[in-house]
Amino acid sequence: MDRIEQLAKEHSNVTRRYFLQLGTAGVAALSISKLCAQEHEGQIDPLLAEAVSKLEYLTQDKDFRTYGRGKPPPHKLPPDKLREVGLARETWELEVVADPESNAEVERPLSLASGTAMNFDGLMKLAETKAVRFMNVMTCTNGRFPCGMGLWEGVPLRDVVWLARPTSNVRRVFYYGYHNDDPEQRFQSSLPIGRVLEDPPGEHPVMLCYKLNDKWLTPTRGGPVRMMVPGEYGNRSVKWLQRIILTNNFQANDTYAGWNNDTVSHLKTCARFIHTPKKFKVNQAAPITGVAQVGMSGLSKVQYWLAPQDKPLPKDDPYFTRAEWKDADILPPPKNWGGGLPDGELPPIPRQFDSGSGKPHHWPIPNTLVHWAALLKAEKPGQYDLRCRTIDANGIAQPMPRPFPKSGNNTIQRVKITVDK
Image (cartoon, rainbow, N blue to C red; front, side):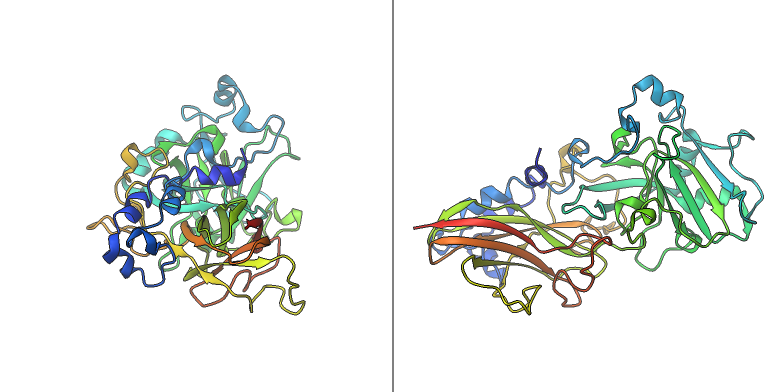
């Protein structure tokens, strides 16, 4: 399935009811709204309402984009082999040990050799008092589209690290996933110990994740346990986690570093299309919908621009800063969160939500996705290029302030559209 088609399946109940029930007063409250069709007596254009109704906020497990290295990749191993290699909940074990190639000191290593490795029952015991939930988008560093949007649950990594009793000379955490015991297929990443042990204000903990959308992680999603590093790209959130090494080595050992990627890159704010028409008629309203990734710099606007292909673009403005961009509408929080949750209802309050009202503290939620929509019109027939971009909370337009590849893909997306008479 094409990724755009896959995204179009998501967010199914987010705003159909919202838009159809707005009425005249509700539309007036959306002071910048382009969604109101005047000929429908203040009601939202049904074309746009139908387009928006196809969206779903949380991505179902089966619809996530999947990456896995190995021959075969771990998630394609048969069930008996998964149990044999420790990729089933009943056989999973995690080592937390000192790096033998450094002078890191750990008093009580959790190791297979000593029989002290952390098992799944032990992790669940910690979860009784330490479990956390938060929403986070999963995006590949070089991918054009998000892999999926999830509600993740797990135990902070630091609570397991402290069980090993590190005492000194620990500057970094190396961690590894299972990849058929073939060094050439092994995927690994790392973090400074400070980021593991302490969270900046408003940030979520790095965690050992065992649930997605309130269901046990499947092997396809990296289960039984994967790393979850909030606010960063997916290469940090290693799947099929089995081994953690505490080291005095200050250098990253990440697989992605060896592939000429920036491994210390927070999510970028950027917009992508979900639904655009291939063609429509002059002065006919055509609905467009999209998704915006809310990165480190937040999000204030999503914009779109329809430009005739026969009109030359200025060579001194590569990011189209002088173009005639128009504001789209950022959609509100859904009543039904989707993702396969029963009735679309969230489990007990994720960290980004108010415990009293059950509503998000902020919208859009940092490090997540938000959906947007608009009605598109053109006054002349011809061939057009349609583009979209974000304006972050600092007022900076995509792809700035970090336009470089290998640290997150935030190029301005373009689609071709025909306008007929």
